[in-house]
Image (cartoon, rainbow, N blue to C red; front, side):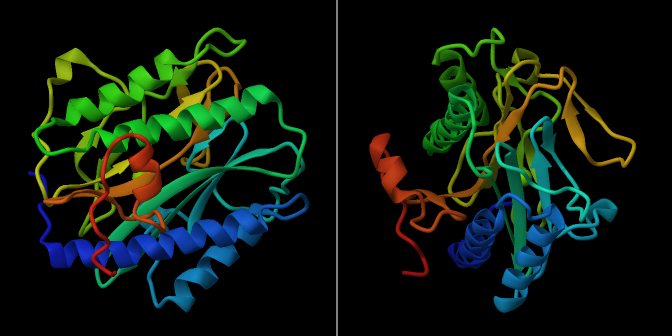
Length: 278
Ligand code: MG
């Protein structure tokens, strides 16, 4: 069963989404060489407290942080640590979430720490981010879930290939429904798998976290002995971008983007729904 939200509930999720946007901004600014990922977690905790919002990552299945900080070949679920010191050239994915009045927001971005990144890493992050937007633009009434997966995968496959041969679209993790809980049905693959079928029809009131994870090599990952940290099997670096998106009667609203996704969706020929918070 997919949870269908009322416009009032989507407005609450927009509030949570804007807290997540503020967490991203503060954490990205603090992600400088010499900072630890634990420092970023404290920045995130302060933003949550300042907004009177609750963390949804902290304690989730025992997760010990307010955010996930995934560096270089860590794909997702990196645990903030005082022992992880960021250095120039690192590629850091920050996944953050917030709860406002019981409604969840969840989004991730990839940050370049300092300078000195190769053109290939810039391209990796760009391709991952743009594939997320292609997926968001496919979140339209009349489409099915698979159309989002297809849009993400086909965007990535249309891009010039990296030196390693092929982008690895991570298969073990994907997007998800979001609302009164962080992770809900349906699971959203970032590629098309025929035996999964086409998935549910997209209808107003549906909210999805759309989150491609892409590596410079393999789609395969493994979990470290801390039970959280997910790394690529071949050690190639990866990027993760995510937004929480509501489908409304007026079209998609990107809950975790400051402008509701308006500017980027317009580039893709899609009109974003009006912001319920004005
Ligand atoms: Mg998510």
